[in-house]
Length: 81
Image (cartoon, rainbow, N blue to C red; front, side, top):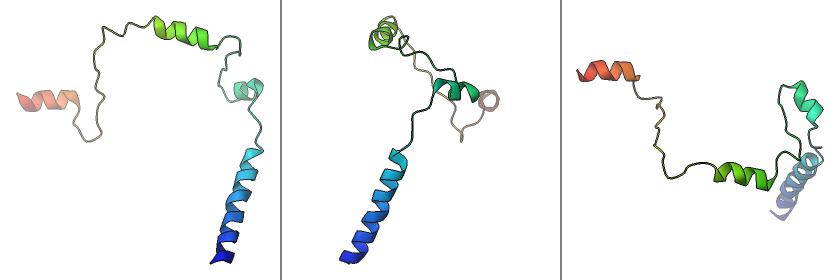
């Protein structure tokens, strides 16, 4: 059991080091795939806080999305009548 445990631990540690060597994605590479990344100076904690601060959190309404098992709204209205 001790020997099997060491082989299992070796496999997990190999996975850890295999995926930790990945480099971050450059903005040029992301543009190639169609993703627009903002510059680091544009996204700061202060700018994101200002965006959240401007949101009116006192006046909101709960919006429920459709469930896969429910009927469409047009079908449910005709069924109730």
